[in-house]
Image 1 (tube, helix red, strand yellow):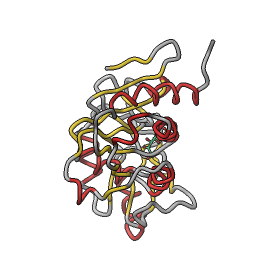
Image 2 (cartoon, rainbow, N blue to C red):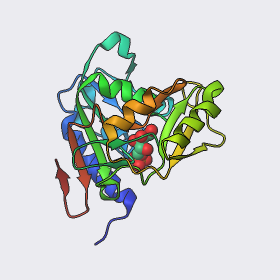
Image 3 (cartoon, rainbow, N blue to C red):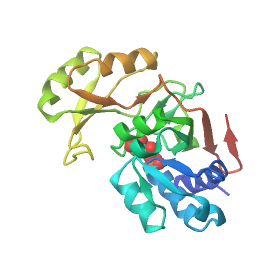
Image 4 (cartoon, helix red, strand yellow):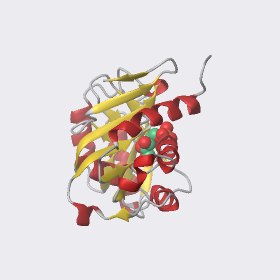
Length: 221
Ligand code: 5RP
């Protein structure tokens, strides 16, 4: 039986639960795969052992609170044991492209502050080269046009995400047509454009563990 993409997301979310057992303070990402994870967490025995979670978005915060998990500030908690999040693309080297849901800045901060980054994806997200999915770049609104011109110089075609303001009050340029052969170099280059808050390349600090829902099984690498 072939599973739908949403069923694959639920399958991989189920597998991620094992990484949250005996972890008092968890880091939680954003997106539809994470939504499945939080829904599954709601019915888990070990939910009562979770002291709190650090959340990567307002949406995730509301969802966590609705199932009774207290949401804590990263400034209070210090570094975390585990952060679990989805991705829009992930390579065999565990480099990721993220930010389709617009939460990339907080995701990168919490991922960076966590000892283990667990990336959970359905098999459609696995790629050899990043960039087929438009690369999200969060920008200060006043820098939007300047940053867009700089991104064109890098070979991309930036498109302003319409009717979208991030949780940080910023805008997002989705950059099409980038063939990202060296994700670390591209992450550093785009980070260095004045006015960029965050680029959705998670390459300098990639995932530590990737779980892939494939239907017949969940692959871990
Ligand atoms: C949000 C993200 C998500 O992790 C990414 O977009 C994947 O989302 P989904 O689980 O809905 O496929 O980076 O900013």
